[in-house]
Image (cartoon, rainbow, N blue to C red; front, side, top):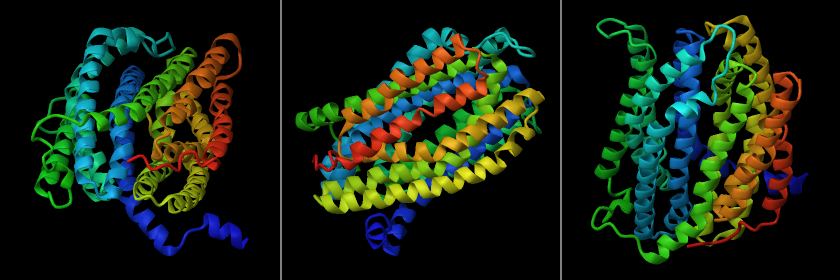
Length: 460
């Protein structure tokens, strides 16, 4: 027992540092997801067609957002270690890489959505009682056309925010996010339903509110970063010239390309799984939209605790403190899974209350409740996989994370969902349960990869 406590249970000082870093990120993510929940409810008041349209576009936007996150994360692998080493110039070059990478992904994303938006949305829309694919497509295209305007500030915000977090300044992105989501929530209500002097714009109003909120969030983060140079030393010389040293660029590309591809392919794989589910009807898509929105409220703890692993472990690795990195990683994984298990129990017990708020058919509410229960059952397993992923990533093992994450999704999850939805008569809830259950395989893989210590590497 004493050995277990020494290996897996940290001191008060350890948890204080971990929680101090994670809490602002959790609060920011909690507020963001809560507003998304309110947004989902308000759009749901417009009918099944509207909720299908918005959820489908958001599913496609999810792929884009993960692509941007991948470009930023490629730089973050080195950014956290450069900061831990005290090399602010190296940290500056990773910032440049992030800025160029996120903007390039954004331009490509806008082109793809403009050219293929209609075809992509149509992949998720099938005939279903009480919903019209044609109307949902028209609403989806309207929503997508407006949301595209907010993609550039989102990309810039990711480049700045990730660098700020690497310095341990997680409060500022949290405050910016809080202001943005509060603005989004207020404008959602005003523009969707036409409150006071505001016009009633429906789905278009929801898109406009999102765009305005993204510009506000990016503006706050960028202005703060440039007016606080003493804690953002990576900005010194960031805009004096445009180059990145060949050796740094090459290192980031070698380590970061698998990570960037992973984020895109994983998100696309998740979308492919959702597309398979949607073959069982648009009511399933609506129920999944409700379920995912609720699950995101509970997932924030393990998602942000996992993200903190890459920062803390990355800083230890950058400073050459390999044993300290291993010790911190063990303790953070156990703490994350423990916290997630508590959240899963709460979600399982109370999750069914949330669908009752939506103005949808009883059948959709029932489906959503079942999906929420299934998500709660597998949540602790997802937490362990998530921690394993960020552990491997912190040491630059991006090819391994590529195999662990996106290859697994495309080789196991997506084909499994494809076969179950097309060639069996198994109920959609059991299909969802079985597909989510493939997380057990990732747990086994993650356990052995983390235990092997292949990630204990100083790469800067």
